[in-house]
Length: 73
Image (cartoon, rainbow, N blue to C red; front, top):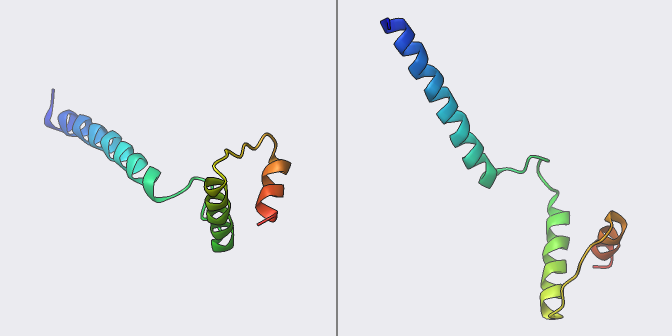
């Protein structure tokens, strides 16, 4: 194996490793859908707080039901 081939193999391995690390780090830093509006985040926090105070689990079976719950806040 020549020096160039060995370096190419090592570079490919390092690229795979960097890709995996970026994927892992990115998982905790960003959302694949993008950033959420602060208003939406605040509404969701209120919804979660209110549901935890009621000691009941709120299940969303449809997207419309989810939006209805969010709008009620």
